[in-house]
Length: 97
Image 1 (cartoon, rainbow, N blue to C red):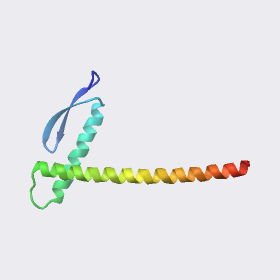
Image 2: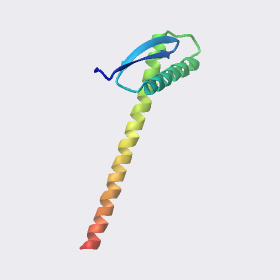
Image 3: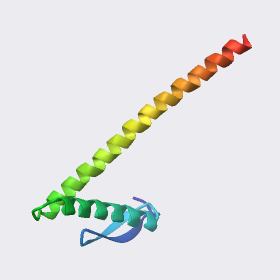
Image 4: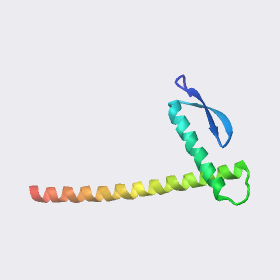
């Protein structure tokens, strides 16, 4: 971390944390809010009370699943776009020749 780092106080699942990060404090707050919401969603989906650690782990798994799904969708879309661009280039090349 460098001199541009700032300290941001956030609350996640009822716990206060001070985060040192080289990002805008509003951005850090929005990340903390996102994580808090994911943990609360997990808690609401469970019938029995669970430890904060277990809820955090399940929320992390859900966030990772969302990330992997988005990444895979992005990769598929990128391949599709590349294929279409290549097709367009081939059509243009044919017309020019």
